[in-house]
Image (cartoon, rainbow, N blue to C red; front, side, top):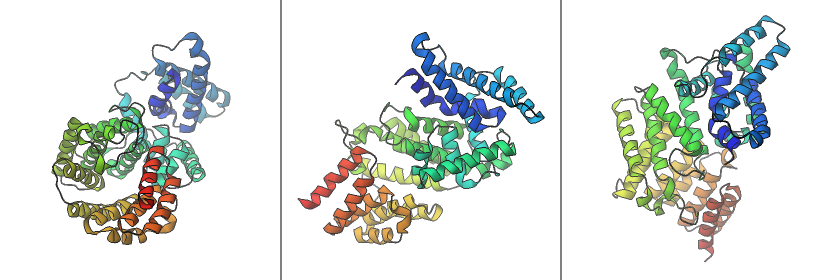
Length: 405
């Protein structure tokens, strides 16, 4: 990875957090950082990469912000913003020990009650982690243009309303925390299929786990914070087993469990126990329990499919979302037979899953198990066409051919 790309890819959100934490204009901070990146692309190949590339980018971006406000400082509000930026320029750089808190601070700002709840998590994904609108749209099952418009409106509201960049007081945390947890989980999901830097801690998935650790340490009495971290650790523990030596996709049922990270699984179990001891069950704890059950089924042969189906039913009661509905149908199929799972899939609004690849992949598999070959072939064709991961597409094609053989 090139130096500029590496600095931006791994630190985009942190840099925006520093630049926007006082001026409150996220869009301006992003524009200034983009200018700094262009400057780096021009200068670093000739002058060499600076010893502290993040600090260099922040310094250049701050100058861009200062120039912008100086050019338009016609009223008291802009003069105040200039003063704030000048104060920020004297503050510690990215190496500051408070740096992780600034990222979470910005996430909590994005969960301010004045911001529409539906856009809070997407706003965090773009502002803090640097995901583009198209990628965020995929995670929330809306079109890229729609998501882009929502994000622009949200940033304008933060700027125009002067929403303060401060972590809310303890009584206000519960109202905001749910959106922060959702954003961290969505970030992990977006990094699920990243295999560059496959070691634990690399890529977007690693960033999400890091944020989950920081949040759990800052809020040790919140059960869902520990539950989310446990969930991500269970999933991440299997990362090396999800592709074979040739890069082919390997489903959970066929994975080599010796490749699973045992230290990560132990930590996940400990986090889940810690969450359960707090006596406040929630969505992420149930999802973590499901992952624990699947891991146990592979490692020690228990629990049975009915236990996993009951956990999915409980999750559906807590979070009746499309992805949860599809997973619930598959779990019920494993416990009661493919037709039972297909009945649940048929209950989902077709309009909500027309472009949702996991739905079509699950339906194809259940139709094949039910002996409904022609329908399964059609469902596999749709799932393959919607697959964005070539390895997953190749696996589905292999399953489709089993029907033809």
